Image 1 (cartoon, rainbow, N blue to C red):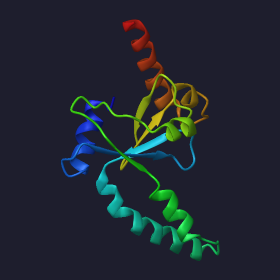
Image 2: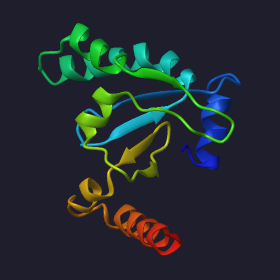
Image 3: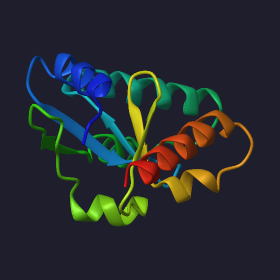
Image 4: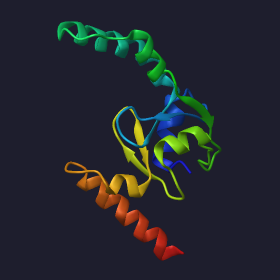
Length: 141
């Protein structure tokens, strides 16, 4: 279920539609979610990344990068925030019975708590918040 604070933001970002864009994060073993308005920024992101690669003397494959960025799934969510993650994304991110949502600016990440707990330095805040949510959920059961 999409938490209320994320639900509102995604709906506003999707021009009032209850549409969540979801994809495998390119580096971490988690998912990333965002509203439809982010699609408008992807072409500019590809241009920036290509320019930086050229400046650094590195190869850049526009087609591969476009395929990565535009390879998200659009999934509907209901008024209470319920949505279904496509099976292929569940498998790529190792998602099980629990899911932790972490804000990240123009997008958010969705984590299997066990995957998040394995990350190293820099993740302590998210790990502590996630552990707290897991403990609260267990106490409610």
